[in-house]
Image (cartoon, one colour):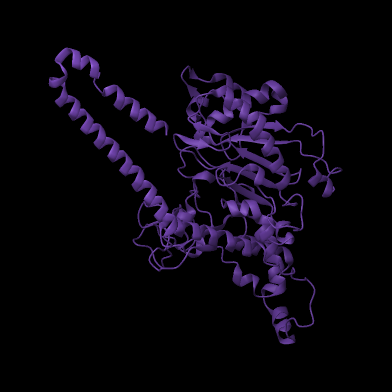
Length: 488
């Protein structure tokens, strides 16, 4: 309606003053111009009314016609929500018992298992073999409502990086999906080994993580393109596509002892990369508690637009068994944020990037974002876990680290170069004055609280060069040395 009013005012101002024209030229001489103006005004009004009528007709038709795009999308959203509810409400199977049951393997099967070469190896040797085969890697775990991936049996040409057999035909957003088979969208699981790093240029870290470097394109969690079929597979040892696949299912199904031994290796020595909002909200409803209790390292890519921080890792199923934290044995947690493009709304701060008000950004980071992050981390990880929160932009980090330095002091803030590359500083969590009813119900009032966690900026986002030159003050605070200019 504001646009309509503005258009009408402009049209009225463009009209000649009838009395001035009549006095200056006379009524008879002014009649043709007045008639022409009246005709054009009438035509514009009719055209405007026609546009409104067509828009109303189109909207009405899209709601009334069953096969319209509006109704098709509405049915698809309803089917998506209903299928998710069915998936979340499925009863979980009982955990496999480590003891032999009455109807377990036959005596012949037991004899074969005892006489196999692998079973006669010492346990530490067996574990070393399993770790070499299935452990100390970063693994993708994905659940998404989508079409099946466009999987190929061979590479289009030699040297082509087709990760996990996912072939992206062009730069279109859905070119990595199978749009030609006519299959419907549904909730689909997928897992693979992460090959976003160049294995020759990135030193290994614990739990299969790797140290990034500044010019590593798509090396950060939020820029990972493995699930779009792009990776550095050619730099990794092994044959394609086996080296891209986890390949553990056959071993898990071979026998009960193999299942328990490989489960400990699979969940206890690998880092799981998760970017699915559904998993980051309802993982406790999809996995049994003994699986969650075995996971030791997580790498999460958060999208506040799709999943607010306050909704992360909250059970969607009523009367579900609440386990706090969700991953009681977690040793390492990294939370990164999806990359923003220019003029996009940053849903973590409800501001548009690039930010035009640093004072307001600082207030929202310290008064809203960080307290929500404190609660989220407490829901996910135990107090003993090492937690790293990677900032989405340098604008975040330069406001947070200075504020922490002023409020906590240099010794407590521990500004340093991160083991995964980039810069990091320590944030001490404020002491909680009260216990929420969820924590009281879970009996957490006597559990020691977390002291703090690392605030991190990826190496590719470090901006020590500014309008005033090089930031030597930060260079000294972080101990980057005299060659900090070349590093940044």
